[in-house]
Length: 322
Image 1 (cartoon, rainbow, N blue to C red):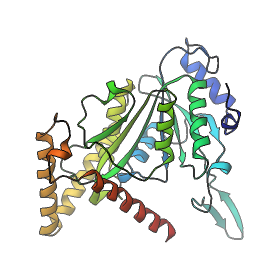
Image 2 (image 1 turned 45 degrees about the horizontal axis):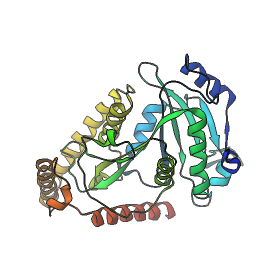
Image 3 (image 1 turned 45 degrees about the vertical axis):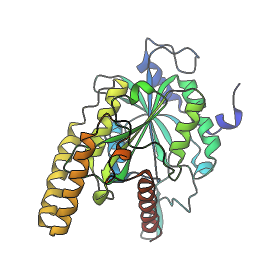
């Protein structure tokens, strides 16, 4: 049964849909109800949490600018509170010359060997989260999406001198294998992205999420190492070929810059990072045990993580109001 209210929340772009159908041949056309092959939907909505700009950097790489064709558009006038997320306008001399209209779109992208996939991005909806999540379920079904993957960065008590860890989630148990279990339960502020995953899973659709742990002391700066780790995990989970060589080189440069700044910093800063390294290495030694946080008292608890989330969001809100 078609959910008319949810279906009215988005429209298809005929040209973009045609390009998607062409890219998926010899599979049947999208919207036909019978689509062969695996179509992956990657999604992230800006405005909630993305420590280290992890998801933003990954999306910039995947979209390659604004060249990716639009397949579907969501009604931002209904979903976005412009007073909370004010779009930019340009004033030139004596008149308004441009308006940076917000867009919440599903775009067509291709990996390094030409495999098509979809990218859903734009500002996080401020309103109608339930209707929005139902609309995403509808779109996933109409386009024949077989796996929806979301990702973002979270601030965490980890050092930049160690590899980036991921916190995975979702209903595909096969994709969760091989990752350490950080905690059993935590309550954190909700988001449209998380609710969408929750409702997709409730509807029996395959979902997979990735939260990249970003060192809390660089959480408000670009941290490309987290974006690289996300793309590596997406490749492993989906089979998409996403080399991201430019991001890897940028990650190396950023790591060198952080090392330089730490080296010029005071002894207290170096001591903090050394302590984080010891905690990280202790957790690595506990890999494979049921619950890392339960066994390592010096590591952050689930409540600590929740407080870290809230503090990060509060700082973001303070900056936007300023």
